[in-house]
Image (cartoon, rainbow, N blue to C red; front, side, top):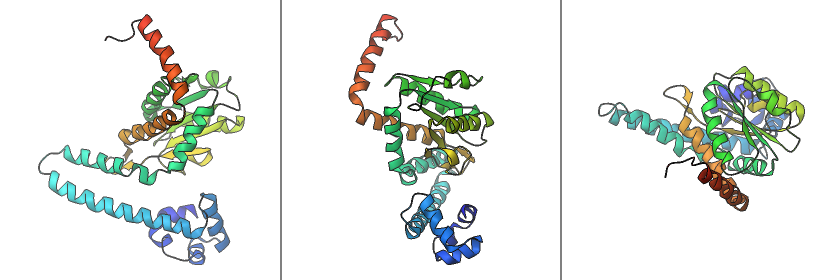
Length: 260
């Protein structure tokens, strides 16, 4: 059913449930249950969501074609910038705001947070770890060299693990996610799609749009998505953040960490 929707979104947007079931070789009941499994209130709501995504994609493609035609001759870098702007403009459109708030609450409630990302995903994991450490305590980052088990062994049922996983998906990250599920630790995935290897097993999934020009995920959109999470934590947990940052500033001053 999932494969059919991915491969034929234009058909899934307008056909009846029994017609889709016939095409996907499943029952009509399975089509409706699939909609519920994705978090929709029913088949019609899922179908409406697919239609909106098709319209948004059509608008983006049309806008991108126009901008490419104008800028290609003027400046080769304008095309790259235009594409980034399109991705950022559509960030909230494709990202479920409810999932961002779920992530915010999970990170505020966690007694410890372990962040992991390997290879191409490590950059975003490092940025998020550093930024999160500046506003709360008990945040740690897994080293690319591999120290996950040593850092994970002290986690509790109240902890959270945040994994970053973008194509090509690193096996190390998938194993970390599987460990979190086995231990009953809340798992948050930042990835490119809901059905990615870590997305399928995570409690909360945040996704970012792929850069169609390069076939890779835009680091700008990933950092912007994480900025939304940080902003949400500031909104809900500002008193604890203030106390934590006061302690940090005293240490920075005592050890002359920064040049004023």
